[in-house]
Length: 332
Ligand SMILES: [Zn+2]
Image 1 (cartoon, rainbow, N blue to C red):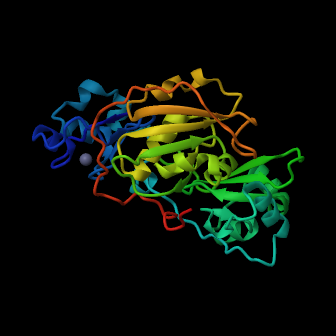
Image 2: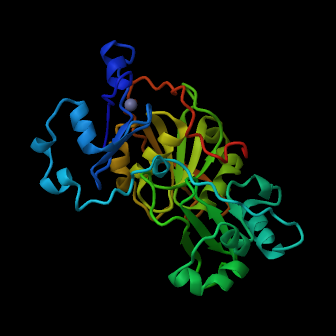
């Protein structure tokens, strides 16, 4: 849940002084735990603190379990839970992992510069050892196989390593390793930051998988979209609205035009809730006429009905740039 922040000098104050016209809030209230966090002023803590700040009586709003705090272990008590985990990334050695490098060039085009792909991991063993990741369950069992046959991508907030088999005919195509015990407040995505958002260039582009993103990003048919966008993200799943919240936080903006590059098996009506998201100024959905998704060539774009409710709120990027993530210098 997002609303205005009532802490001193933050959003509500500037709203009352009419410094902000119809912007929307930056205070996130978790719907899973009784905690909150403000992206603008970094105020965070228990929901009790927030209610008191609003001059309310916590007893009127909260059940006794929350009030005495006995049955709750706060998962999000640290600021880092809202931020980004940085991991050591092994250098791409030109003498080894020839098959992995060949596969990436086959998927992404010979001209691709592998060094510029954010969070790319070829040496999975070194990555796991150097970052002291404790493997469990199937990740432990499959470890040798993952090391030999998969390429990995670290998600932008550093909570997961998403793995893809370089053998397109293998039974196991995908795998995921959790890099930290608990996920953070925001849904993690795999993102590529293109530029800082400007008033007219603030489109975010979303697709399902990492290869959809990387293939489409380098394809001439999508150049026009690339030029007016600031951030591309693979949602890694289907939670588009959660992914949008996460990307807006990474870009430090509150509202954006959204483009979805959709797999052909997803009907347009599945994106209804995205068009209703108050942070989405306009929504365009594209399909690839020539294939199932955007992860394989060739690509020919088909734009479907455009949700044209252009919400006319102000969308000035904030001054605060703390969240622009660690991969931002590796631009495409
Ligand atoms: Zn605040």
